[in-house]
Image 1: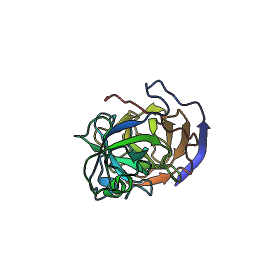
Image 2: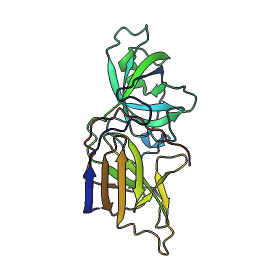
Image 3: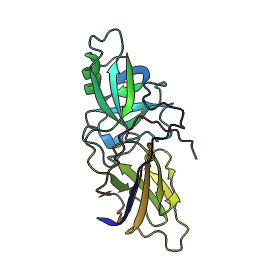
Image 4: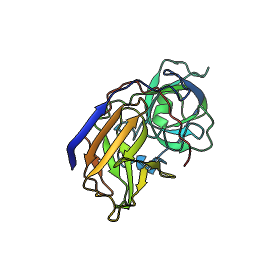
Length: 241
C-alpha cells in the first residue's frame, strides 16, 4: 500500500562530474552464462524489468561500482570481425556481477549473445552503452526481509535510469555489502515507523523522486511514479563505506 500524502519531483540537468561523457561507449569481451533466477544475481532483485529473465547481463568488476549500476540497462552490439552483422543490438538489464571480467566486459544471457553475434556462446568483442530501460512501468520500493524499525533496507527497482543515491526519512542510506539494498540504522527509541517511510531517490541524471510509503518486510510497494529524464548515459562511481 502506498501513501502519497507527500510527493515531489525535481528535474535538473544530467551531472557529468563523474568523468564520463553523456554518450560514452564501452568496449570489451562479450561472453555468456546462464542465470537460473533473476533474483539469484548479485543484485538480489526482488522485482525487475520484464526483459530481465531473458535479457540479463553481469557487469565487470571494475564498473560494478559496489552494486551502484544494478538495475541499469545497456544496449549491446558486436564489433568483432567474426560478426557478420555489426548493426544488430539488444538491450540488457544489469542484474549480476562478473568478478573475473575486465573493464568493458559483459557476461550476457545466451539469448542476447546469440542475437547480437549470431554465434553460440564464446568470447567476442562487443560495444555497449548505458540506455534507458524499456517499458519499466513504475518504480517499486522493496523492503528487505528481516528489516525492522531499527534496520531499514530498501531496494528501488523498475527504474527508467540508474539510481545514484537514496535517503530514508531524511537520512542518507549506505549500500548494503553484497546485495542491492540501501540501508539506514535508526537511533530513535522506538525505531522508524515502517507504515510511514519517506524515501528519496536521486537518479544518475539528478532527478529526484520523493514519497512516503507503507513498507512491509519481504514485499515491494508501488510508488506509481517513474523518473522522466531520459538521459541515462551518465555513469556513477561509488566508494565502499
